[in-house]
Length: 326
Ligand code: NAD
Ligand code: UDP
Ligand code: UDP
Image: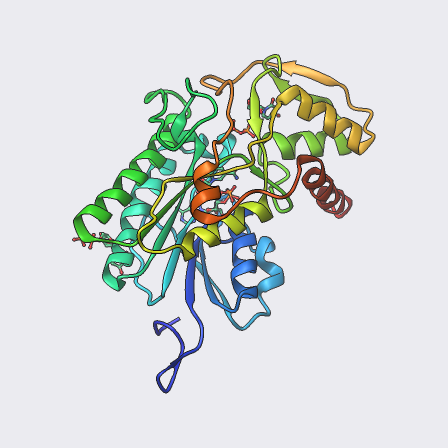
């Protein structure tokens, strides 16, 4: 992609959008939606947790391009907009090489901000509810500063993402950059990796294989689960907002469920013979999590539409197909 925007004469035809982490779970859905909206998409990914398979159905599209690249290294391209999603998101993956996780968040943010600064283009950061750590305020509003253990096993991800937010806000203050920061809460849906280790994919895969369902701790910890289509819609709305609204803004589904409730729902919906077993709770595992989404409702006119049961149904259908092809 050599030129900023496609120009025929003086007419601007399409926006060129970079999505870092575009071959991952959320990124692949975002690539698809942005292409459908008439944009040209450059998917930048090092395939650490993502795969070509996730975007295989887009390869025929002449407006789609993939670049294998690690965003801890500089990247010089000409584009109109950046969505920065590159970073492993599941605890199993981000703890596999924790120093690399922090480098991806921090050095990746610096490089993408440098790119945005050179081109004077908008940049959206995929931040996370993990910036709130194990929250002492419930539900979590954007004004809450969080409760993160800076030296625990989750810190490489949580502190990396917090530092990335700091960088975004400093580039805004120092260089007047058009930044957008969204704090994403647990998101699920098709194209989650079957071995990703996150709770929704683990439970569905275990249930479909009639294996034991592994509930960590006593299962009383809570999470709020957002279906990926709703999330992507929120991210695109955020990118479109006026320069003045920079966030951070929570994007998540405020429906709150215990992990045990989720396990029971998945067993019932799959008709599985699986039984629930209890395993030790990982260190620093947040006890509760639920987004306050008033700000997203007010500023983006966004509210999630897909109920957990509907979203789980679609995700179960996806995993049924994946497991059949194994
Ligand atoms: P994912 O692991 O499926 O996707 C991450 C992508 O980033 C992968 O394709 C991976 O290969 C790529 N990547 C990792 N390190 C890279 C690097 N150094 N250079 C280039 N590419 C790199 O995870 P996801 O669930 O799609 O998450 C996407 C983003 O959303 C992440 O930034 C994550 O922190 C954020 N997020 C996700 C959730 C969630 O519930 N899924 C919640 C909060 C925040
Ligand atoms: N950068 C990049 N692509 C660009 C412009 C910059 O990857 O198009 C990287 C560059 O390597 C630099 C970083 O972004 O290290 C931060 O850029 P900035 O201009 O803020 O800082 P400086 O170059 O002054 O260190
Ligand atoms: N969890 C679980 N069994 C699993 C995977 C996860 O009980 O097989 C729990 C995990 O301990 C946490 C919750 O489910 O309390 C959500 O975990 P996930 O890794 O999906 O996301 P995060 O902890 O980052 O919110």
